[in-house]
Amino acid sequence: MSRADLEKNPKDVSRMFNEVARKYDLMNVVLTGGLVFPWRKVTTAALEIEPGMKILDIAAGTGSSTAQYAAAGADVIGCDFSAGMIEEGRRRHPQLKFVTGDATDLDFADNSFDATTISYGIRNVSDPRKALSEMLRVTKPGGKLVVCEFSRPVNQYFFALYKFFLHRVMPIPSKILSSDAPAYDYLMESILDWPDQCKFSQWLREAGWENVEYKNLTGGIVAIHRARKPN
Image 1 (cartoon, rainbow, N blue to C red):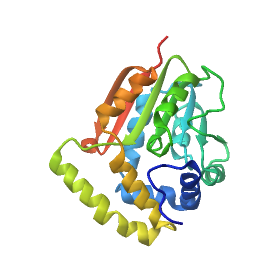
Image 2 (image 1 turned 90 degrees about the vertical axis):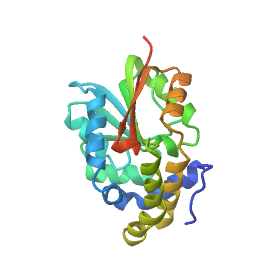
Image 3 (image 1 turned 90 degrees about the horizontal axis):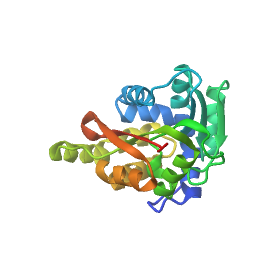
C-alpha cells in the first residue's frame, strides 16, 4: 500500500494497522531497543490500578498493554479501530475482552470507567481533541486519564540525534522485518508532526480535564500525561 498521509484518513490508517498487526509488537521492541517495556511499566504505575478497577484501553492494538493492566487487577476492555489488531489481540489473549471502536465516537455510556488510557495511539486519531472529549465523557467523575505518547526530546542536541535515528536508522529494520515498511514511514512522520508536551497538555485542559501533568521518559522521546475528570 502507499504510505498513509498525515490527514489520517481513518480507513487508510486502519488498513495500515491491519496489515502490520502480526509483527507490530516485534517491531515495537526492535525500534525502541526494548524501551517499550519500561515505558509500559511506568504507564501502568500511573494508572494506580486497584482490584476491580474498570479501565478502557483505547488503541489497545494486540493487547500487550491490556494484558498488563488485567494482570495488575483491572477489569479492562481493549478497544481499537483496526479489526486486524483486535483479531490478533483475541488470538493472543483469549481471556481478555476486546471491541472494535473509534476513539472519536466511543460506544460506551457516560461515566462508565474509573480510568481511560491510550498508548501510542492518540496521534493516529483523525481528530485527537474530539477523542479527548470522548474519553472525558466515558470516564467517571474523579476518574483519571493516562496518555503515553511519543513526544519532543527536551535537549536540542538529543532531539537532532533522535530525528537522525527516525530518518536514517529506523527505516533499515522496518524494511527487513516489516511486511509493510511504508507504514513505518507514516509512523515516523506522525511522531515528528505531533505537538510537544505543553501543547498537548493545553489540549487536555481545553477538553475539560483538570490536574493535568506530564512526565518525560528517555529525555522526552515519550511523555506520560495524566489528568482527572472534574467531580
